[in-house]
Image (cartoon, rainbow, N blue to C red):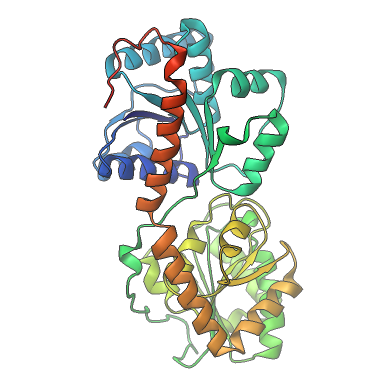
Length: 387
């Protein structure tokens, strides 16, 4: 197949990560992929780094009416020149562009909406209904919650909404050696609880610190490691939270990327996802499990899909420091259970959640959409490749 992907997002997010990785691994399976992205963005740089073919001369986020007309013409030229079998829109703005293009030119190239980032239900206003019900052949989502939303809000056929979870490149997680702790008082024998996440309120750092205080009251020897990068919250904000929770002498904060994340995660006895929202794709949860670390995770987004696939950890309500702490203490006190959960999680990731497996599932969904849409006709149909 020839697959045309587009994502207009300027920054780098789970959606960008998903788009680049799924296109890259589709390439490796023998399909041809072209990624349309915003000029000069990180998505373009990441695509170039993995050898992905890309087009970065269109800004689909432009709101100027004349620019929007120009963009439609540019997209039309790309369609005519590249002759894709299917188009995958990884962001809302480009999904709208492709829908309008299909309306104007009666184009029969199947359109796919890929929703791998935003955990909110889709908007169900009249234009969105038209776009999804009339112009979109397939919706690909990353978790069961989003699938239910699309089926219920748009009354779509069951077969038109597919779940294709994100995968993980597991090579760096094969046998990681734990990095050396940098905080005073950290010893090899200290049980360690870790949270890897950008420094943002949505990741639940405040919940984590309240839980840390409760854990430390029961297990005074415990140590905590937070790794990530500054965002809405700064390192000094996290240190202040730690001080108020009374665990500032038991914590290490890593705010600069130093080598493989697996080396940091391998230090953990328990990995935590304390997010109060988001996590449509929880990349760090995949990384915890691939490293063999059992988890205590909030029941948000796609997390329950992963944890319910096998017994790899404990699921707790988002925002509940008490239940988060109880789950951490429960695992820290049971070495054999931690070992069993860690082994089970590692095996599951290596068997079912690699990017190779995700790309195969993605390709199967696209292939079915192409086959079922081939009878509809297209102004490009005589020109399109059948590869």
